[in-house]
Image (cartoon, rainbow, N blue to C red; front, side, top):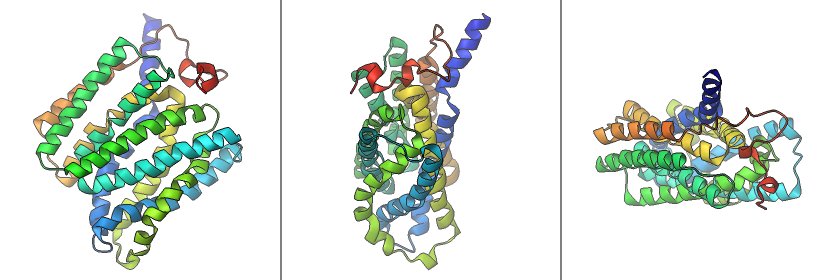
Length: 330
């Protein structure tokens, strides 16, 4: 019994990875922060131009920090194949995804936005299984199904309250799909390259899309009219939900793989909905509370016991940290 208890704790610890729990709360609050940021920037910029302008500003703040951290992490040592893979993954994750996400957030409430984005783990998990990067199990499928039902309940209730538009939901759905694809693209890179290094060398590729998208809008900002709310929400977007959470997400992905990373992200909708209710007054209905219970129940069911596996060691890869060569994926 003592061994079972110890291994069960290890299984839960791998699912409730500290870095990923930080991501849940950082990104869960970020849905509310972005709505506050858009409101704060209304007096200084046309609301239709805010997503593009703020996206450029975010990366101009984030990238130098990633570059400094990458220098300490690896001195930018990276092979040419990993360089190209990092750039392609971040073009999708920090370019395509971010443009779609920021535009969708302008038209949707915090609750439904978090719900739609939470379908990205499903995309990542299914791709990881399809490419045989990870193995599925009946327990994981059942837990994933229950958690998905919970996410859907949260979304239906939020939409019925009028907290989003159809176009906004479609943009967020497209962003969720692109993020899910980027997760699977990033996992092989993280088998050989640290998170800071991958982000530092990859984000410039995303800037090829982001800068033309938002540079003129950023230059149109009336900087002297930005108030305290505008500055602190921008700081949160770039430093907490950006620099800190991006590193934590990819650290968790490298440690536990796409499946467990995706399962942890199912906590985003309830966290975002509760914070949206407390801060923005977006009332949570019975469907959202029931959805919260389903999400937590699904996570509990899907937790991988793996009682026969040894604890991860410092010296060698575990099954979920295999490199593409070890899994037969090139």
